[in-house]
Amino acid sequence: MLVLLIRGQLLARFPNLSIYAYPIAGNEKRPGGADPPPPGGGDPEMDPTKALMPVLRGNLGRDISYVGFPIKPDAIGTYFFIIEEHMTEPRFGFDERVGNGQNSNSWQDVDWVDIGVDNGSYFGAAALRKAQPAKVPANVPRWVDPHAATIADAALQRPFRGYWRGDALKTPGG
Image (tube, rainbow, N blue to C red):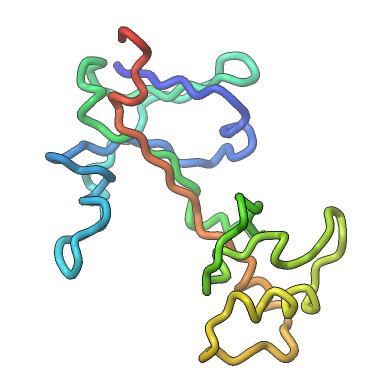
């Protein structure tokens, strides 16, 4: 059995994360296909029937979690290990600023600095209107009076999915 140890607060903060293994086919750089996907060809999605779910999961102390898979330890390099949020558990908010931020036309890339709301301050339609012109393409109508649904649409965060090649997770000399 192959057991992954995850140290930190990730699983304490997000206890419903899905963790699973996915076999690497050929020279895949990401689960389910090439990175980036070939233009106009190939199926970039993972095949859910190939996902290998853990057979055990638990905690060691306060900050170490373990997940066990029915995989021989020497086969670790033939799998991706994936951690993802459930699609049915939406989160709302904006991104933390990294460097100078992103110059994007998507609400998914708006960060708290773009909104101009200080820590602990109220966030509402006025703050959203302030961020909008720099982030929305010219051909999209501006919001004159945003309401709760438009704010929720702008603040909805896509679920996170992270993946690692198994050989990158091996301990040194392991």
